[in-house]
Image (cartoon, rainbow, N blue to C red; front, side, top):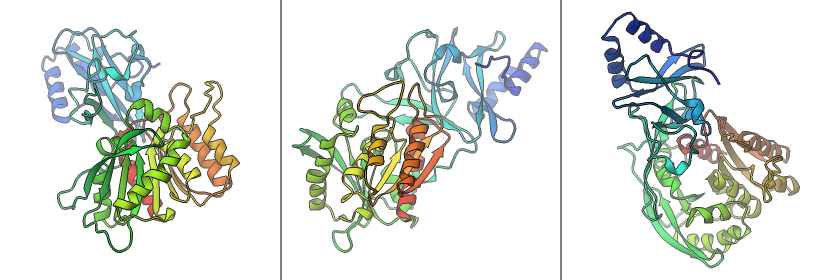
Length: 412
């Protein structure tokens, strides 16, 4: 771990020197600059790197400020405490990061650095940075008991990939999003299914291309799929297509159904796809159909491609959890689904795989398993579009790269 003395912002050093020299206006000037430009403070180093300094303006008694997320990581709050500048109201901590990094973070004040961190405490114990106007909001899902809105602060370095397709544009016609509730005899439950139809959708002529995504609520609230499809279609980058966003009834069901669960295949084949063809004018050509998802959803998409290639000829995996095993062993990852692809004949499938270079956590090696899957697929003769971004396991990056996946698969 680098100490504060070993890694300090030149701007903070200059401020400290000015205060020691008796410049009583230096601190007020500094805070005025931060108010105008926002935090964190970013200072360019050698090519490809910046010093990023997180700040806290202590407007009440403060004895501890902790950064959680981004370059601070998620596991060691004691190692990511801010330092106080002299006896002022300024607390800070500086990190050296790559110029193309994107992520999220939160802050905690006057909290025990030895307390165990729980993701559910974001929004109560951990709060967004009040000095940073850029936020990532996970809105409350009204249909989930005890769910709440969670707000992160966004850390985005100057060379981070542009996310131009996620922003609504006033000149772009919008498609329609319809909510259905689909009961499944096979899965013995009911779930929400949203269906997006493009602007000008008609039930005649050539059937529409089809995109099926797991984690439906996430692909509406966290990754704005309808907006992305609207923008790409209007720009002529992709043909008009219908998107089906399949939700999970709850987290426990998601963890079961999206981890290589054979009944999910039966649900798609026997229930979802017949229902979809009955109600919407969509293709039955697997070469014009994409199945995709994020994290466990990416794992599920590849599993579906392996077992239902007659329906789905394209797999779009965003940060797919290919480390998953039927019988987990924290010492040796068997990567169960990858082994299934090794043992299976090559199918008529195309793949888009992506992973963030900062996604490894504990014994889970997200980067390694995605690279392994890529290599296995290519050795088997599959066409694979593979992309690595400088970011974490969070949709703040995936919301920008969904368009990349669609362009890669639909451009074939």
